[in-house]
Image (cartoon, rainbow, N blue to C red; front, side):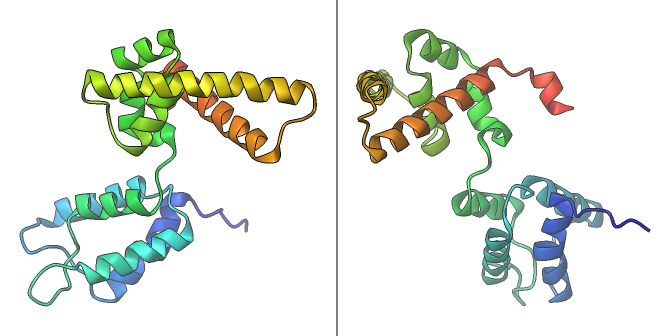
Length: 192
C-alpha cells in the first residue's frame, strides 16, 4: 500500500485545527454547525502557505485569543488570517490584494513608467499608495533603484561588485520577475 503525501491543507489540520479541537476548542455560540465546518475548511485553505513553526505559533495565538465565557471558542476567522499574515506573508501570487494591485490600472501605469517593482513591494508591505504624494515617492524610489541597478550591473561587468550590492541586485531582480509574472499571468489558468 502506498502512503499518500501530506498536503499543505492536511498539515494545517494536523498542526493547527486537530490539536485545538482535541484540546476543547469549539464553534462560537452564534455560529451554525455548517458555517463552523465551512470556516475550518477555509482556514485550512487560507493558511496552507504557513510553515510548521508559524502554524504552531498560530495555534498558541488561537488559544490565547479564544472567545466565549469559558475561552474555548474559536477566534474569528479574520483574526486568525490577519495574525497569520503578520507571522508569515503569503506568497505574492496567492495574495489577492497584491495580484489585484499589480493587475490594475495602477499596475499598468507603474509598469509603463518603470516603478512596478516598487509598487509591488509597497503593495506587499503597506497596501496601496493612497495619494499622488505616495506615488511620487514610489516613482522617486524607482529612479534611485534603477540608477543603483545600473551602477551594480556595471560593477558586475568588471567583476568588482561587493557581495552586499550583488545580494541587493539579486533581490531586486527577483522582485521584478515576480511583479511581471503577476502582471502577465492568466488568472483563469492560475485559478484552476
